[in-house]
Image (tube, rainbow, N blue to C red; front, side, top):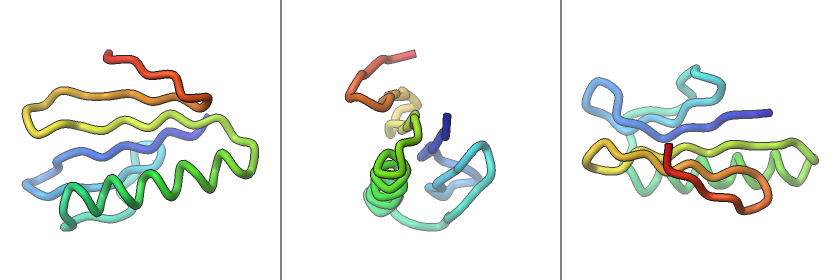
Length: 72
């Protein structure tokens, strides 16, 4: 399973893959757009994906391949 995350790190919105930063210093909406594209591409290759997105107030939304949603 591949994990992507959008979270605030050091005051900047950052996109992570497997815990490693891919892109930072971008707006939250740009980070979410990039993470969704990466997720879509991975799912198209047949990989299972979990996408975690941090909200403005620290809450996290988790979306798994297949459209399942859960709040941890």
